[in-house]
Length: 325
Ligand SMILES: NC(=O)c1nn(CC2CCNCC2)c2c1CCc1cnc(N=C3C=CCC=C3)nc1-2
Image (cartoon, rainbow, N blue to C red; front, top):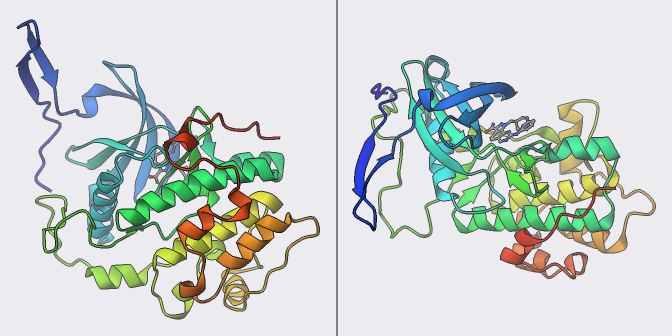
């Protein structure tokens, strides 16, 4: 990285009344007051931060440059930034506002999800009723549809990566292991963005990176275990696991260790507990299908009986979140 430091760019503009307005266009470390630690990744720390000027709160993801280079994770860093830039305008996905760097670190300034993890809420109340599962399932599916329409496969969807904002609406996070397909909105052959000036020397090539990643055991799709290839339907397998888990309090495939969990997955070895709602059961059975080609498409899921009554699109994000009981 060329160390651009935290140079703060200022732009002089004139407003409608001809008054000179000086606008700050580049943020830096000095513009934020850093607070408590929100989470640790393998090469990043996420910290609560407040913008000194606007007092707006953010989550700032701080990536250690030395560690990234030593662990050859430059590609992951590029993928995450490119992914977040592609998904910039969906209410169900953590938004990237600014990036900057100093001599030691890269900084991503992201939406704060003050409600923490969906998993935390699920653990607190045990399991969700149908209404809450329908609402949160619909928001997660709407965000997955947006990702897939932009050529992004998340590959590690799980309740820990579904966060909640102050309206108890979801915000999906952690795109460091996403798989980026060519952006359908960019004309064929157009260069796909990267972090400028970041050498890829000694980097895994994209194919190796894309094939080397396996998500979190309980949510990994069978195709990722058998032929190492994730596709959009892999996110819908994880979605089926999440719907099952919201209604029962546990994922469908869980064993004493990862190997036994993987065996259950490829053997489609799971059961529905008594009282599992029939419409939800039909939906989950059409998602937890070994052949990714035969899994329900997003359009079919949206029209499934389980989601009867859901107003898809912008209306879904204006709805008041149901009380979690
Ligand atoms: N890896 C990330 O990008 C990331 N990690 N976190 C915190 C993790 C804590 C463990 N589970 C997954 C998330 C965040 C982000 C994005 C941006 C982001 C925005 N808001 C929060 N909010 C939290 C609030 C309370 C507890 C934990 C997180 N967290 C994050």
